[in-house]
Image (cartoon, rainbow, N blue to C red; front, top):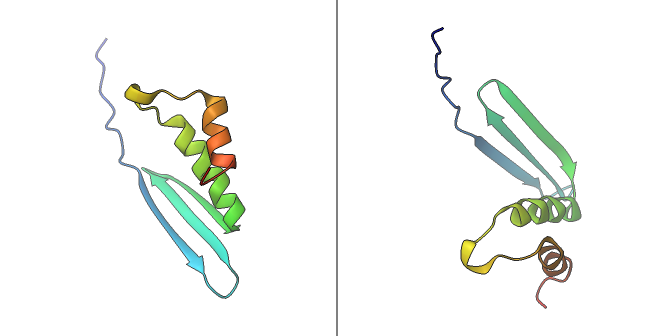
Amino acid sequence: METCGVKKSTIQTTGSFDILTNEYSFTICSGSLVVSFDFLNEDDIREIISCLSCMLVDDDTITSHEQCQADLDNPGS
């Protein structure tokens, strides 16, 4: 049986902020998949950042999920 490799598409992102409505939107694209998030507020964006930040692990300073969330829930502390 012959196999054929699948070329992985690069992820592309774009976003915007509407100063009149104070709403954010962003789009993530990869190949033929496109996902858009519209009508977000600042808290929504912070929640998304929280999730993405906790998924990134620095091998030198591995932080527990609980500590990561605590740090994000209390910015500047």
